[in-house]
Length: 126
Image 1 (cartoon, one colour):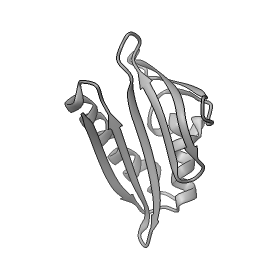
Image 2 (cartoon, one colour):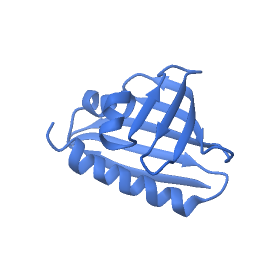
Image 3 (cartoon, one colour):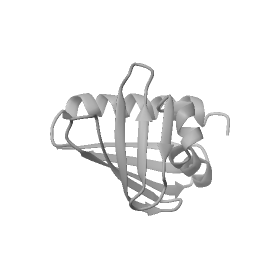
Image 4 (cartoon, one colour):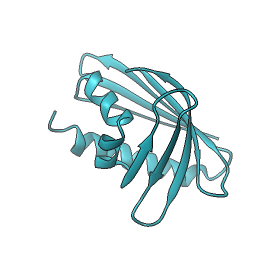
């Protein structure tokens, strides 16, 4: 199953990229604790206050444009997440696609809420 979310953020591409790729910035809007080695083969860990943890493995990095990683909950199946950014006249088009082995509706709801919250709060003051 593939889940796709798109949004245009009224912020420059460089600012959006930083919010998606810098561990400290990800902690501001996505997970409570983030470790991310932003290079192909790098590892990452996302932790939330409710105890959820996801381990990540970076597959691709095209600085400022594309970030792809695989992640999973402990004991769970991997899913692949691809973030793509494109400049538009109104800011930055953000596309996230998650390829899931199972559990599509739950993941879809999570990405939709996270992206909307991020776009309306984190980047609203850029």
